Image (cartoon, helix red, strand yellow):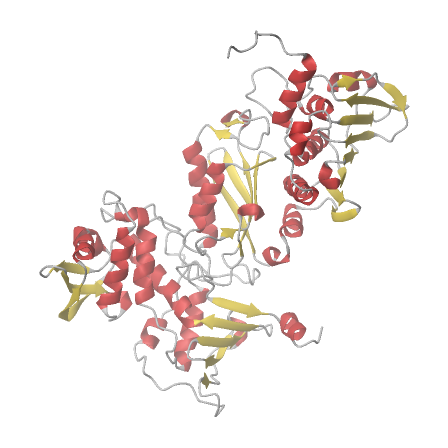
Amino acid sequence: MRAGRIRMLPEATVNRIAAGEVIERPAAAARELVENALDAGATRIAVAIDGGGIDRIEVVDDGSGMTDEELALAVQRHATSKLADDTLVHILTLGFRGEALPSIGAAARLSITSRPAGADHAASIRVEGGAVGEPAPAAGPPGTRVVVRDLFFATPARRKFLKTPRAEADATEAAIRRLALAAPGVAFRLESDGRVAFDLPAQDRQARVAALLGPDAAAALLEVDGGRGDMRLTGFIGAPTVSRATAAAQALVVNGRPVTDPLLRTAVRVAYRDVIAYGRHPVVALFLDLPPEELDVNVHPAKAEVRFRDAAGVRGLVIATLARTLAGGAILGTAPSVQVRLDADRPMGRPQSSRPGLSLHAAPRPHAPQGFAEALLPMEAAPAARVLPAPDRFHGPFSAAAPATAYPLGAPVAQVLDTYVIAVAADGSLVLVDQHAAHERLTHEDIRAQLLDGGVRSQKLLLPGVVDLPPADAQRLLARAGELAQLGLEIEAFGPGAVLVRALPAVLGAPDPGPLLRDLADEFAEMDEATALDARLDAVVARLACHGSIRAGRRLAGPEMDALLRRMEATPRAATCSHGRPTFLKLSRAEIERMFGRR
């Protein structure tokens, strides 16, 4: 069938098609209106929606306002006051396209009432389905009030594909939250169907982040500050112990603009991948500032994606800054007032190992007190005094040599189930430590530190061990024997399907090499043969650390428990194990009293 003859579309149809790109749902319309308010210098913004924003969206601000002549221009396509020139390389405002108001007017019933400061009266204008009315005098305070009703009444096909009012309301709330977080100096209020979702005064950035990300994240915020050239990254991130099932709690702001940029999200994921469980997402509020000419915001009408001129530099800045922040001791995010002393003689970090073949990015490594390795040598030492005849698996108490006030994780008092160490902090908080998870992180960081110093020290076995494996697994291990030697693991072929183990990493002690080699073979099976080991180095180190750590069900003497806590306090990333699970839990006095019904 031959298509119809080519013809020019009516202007109203063109506008409705364009509106579908800019205003694809109520959340987009609300976001555009709030961005206009911010660009107008508002210090207070109130948003109210009904029916998820489908029935009504109202945005009231105390910004600079518009005259009747400016109102008439504002609802015309591509009319804007926000571009100083036509180059699109020095954009300092959230909006700049001049499409939002005419797009909303083409798809809904739009009314705007505005009054500049010092004007005798306000002016109003109406647009319905693209039909523009004339400005008229009106009553109103300084600022602007925009009301959008019956969104997409003029484009029923678009309206039919909207989600439920509840889902649209959630999306709109999320959009306004991101803008409120990006502009903490502006007071924000949001109502949905008469319910106040949030009402925030103008506040500093940390208070705004804490208010919007929730109490669990607020209690474990770590401050971020890093720079590279003209770029600066600041903000707050959640401790590894605070994670979410989705990335919804990740706020990324570039030059004051909330974005959902894939490059930034990937960088965040890489920075957290060794300290958070697979499939979980960290909580972050990051603010990246860079020269406007280094950023292209003219990527999509929604303006949620940006392009960086130096994408590799941005990615490196985010990863390095977050990794440095996460490399604090176990107390990070739980006792921010306590400072971990750093070893002044150790450099803050080295770019890679001086030994060829394997490389590992360094994080600042606090000085670790000596004594834990020595304390753990006699693992069969007499257990702490048993104070309860039953159950059989409770041991204690143990009085640490130093008072709890000296240490953030407190003094150990007992071990339960031969797995968990109980300690009491100076403020009365109860600390529960998973001994295997904690020691796994300590071992992991020891191996990393040795790699950075040139290679992992190995311990020759008096009697080399022979491990039988499926031929394919044995071949995978032998193909990487040179790389494994740098990790302190020396192996060689021993007939078909067998591997001879001559040395193990000294930090692991003397574990059975069989389970270790089988796990490493599984790790290599997921890697392409051409992939260098350092591409998955931390995952391999995690495997080693797991097999060299004290196990659940192992009784610890009092000095061992005390040494474990002290090493945790001075070890990078000690709040989680190598697999992202928490190494300790801390219950405050208020939480304990709440559980017993005292509050």
